[in-house]
Length: 461
Image 1 (tube, rainbow, N blue to C red):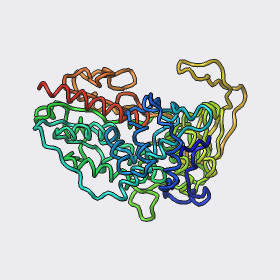
Image 2: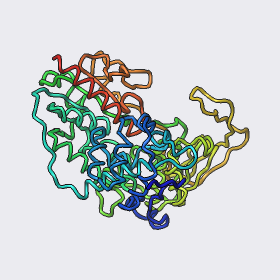
Image 3: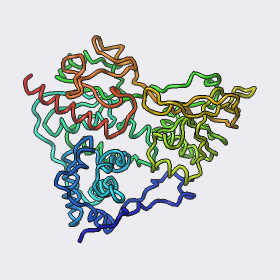
């Protein structure tokens, strides 16, 4: 019998006061009974509008229909046809802006918890399935993938399934890209990422770490070594700063560095070889998901934390769920606030941050209301740590070492949208290296597009 409740089943979570002191996963996942009950809310629409909202076009009604009957492995196989990283996507995708935003149930109530069901199905598969993944027969053609983030892993997985000999080159010592260095353990356990990486290895993907393409080896040299096509999924790891006085003081981090030290290098663990400054009062500048991750990480390290954002809460780009969790954990929010200077003490450490109060005016070129300074509104927030989370750009290393590779004024690689082809023959690109910092699922969609194009190209080579 269909479940016609207007509200979705709640996701069980750790108690806020407890989780704010540990790095264990916040969301605990659906039980089998809850998953089936939530799946019964799906109307199995014939035109499946939810699928149009998914960047990788998962057959959502089909997998949910299998959950309804308790065929969880069958549901996983439906998802896996379209997505190489279901356990990851079920946790970090902004479903509320994508598939769930198209759900018919959302018109008069809450949409079906598609993301929560995807997470459940992937976790059930990982916990119950021991069957080895079959390695496809090789077609003898080699493809190089630069970067092991979501776009690179997706591209590699799609090509490996078709028999290509894929090598992924990762600059860091661990595969996973932003999934391991950017997203905290409490939101995406690294064992989950490793499970997905291991599945790609079982398909025959060769992962080589500590290889900095553009320095260790160039794209031209990859072709010389017999690779027939190259996919660039190197991400956007170059942090941006505001250019205000005091940004060079001790205690000022980019969110990129702060999160990498904690997530990849495990600085939060006692005895870690990687140092991290455990502040008393932290100010995080920015309002995106990365800002929420940085703020919630600083809180877990024992700091009082304030997020400053120059627009209102309505304009916050972070997921509503992440903002909600941050508030529950005691993060302070200072809206309509813009930093103008960071003060330091006599030893060169951050002492406070000076801000202006803002008000919203006419929309700017992004379509959002433009924040403008309120005269004589300057005030100071006490802080011994400031984390800048105002965006990142693609690293210019590949561009600077690859002749003829066209980029835009922001450093993003220029591609043909339908094919992911760059200005160079046989070279494709996708994810943050093209768009700048965006979502995991959009990067995966780009990797999938590129894999399809590479396959079409190499059929004739």
